[in-house]
Length: 76
Image 1: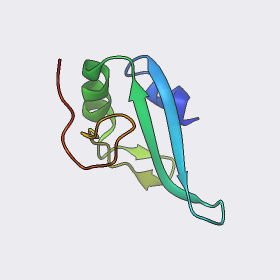
Image 2 (image 1 turned 45 degrees about the vertical axis):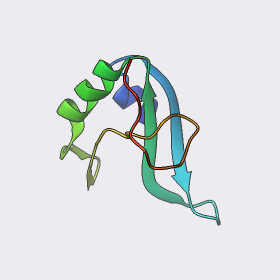
Image 3 (image 1 turned 60 degrees about the horizontal axis):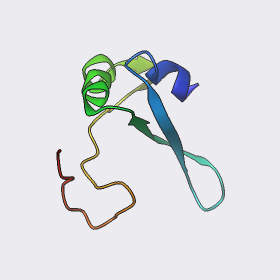
Image 4 (image 1 turned 90 degrees about the vertical axis):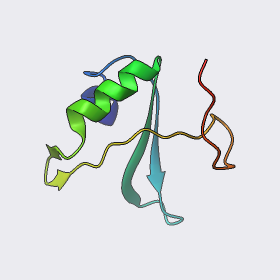
């Protein structure tokens, strides 16, 4: 369902649902788009909007893909 909703903003490359160690949903997902502009569009469309019974907080993740060092990603 997350992929379906967020695909309205652009071409979704990947969706990662965050879960607890017990496998329960944390109510959070990472959506990766083909192009950065599509991610910006998703923030514009969905941040602070209600989906079912929850208000979404949608923001740009500035970490490099595959790295977890907290440094901002490098733009082309």
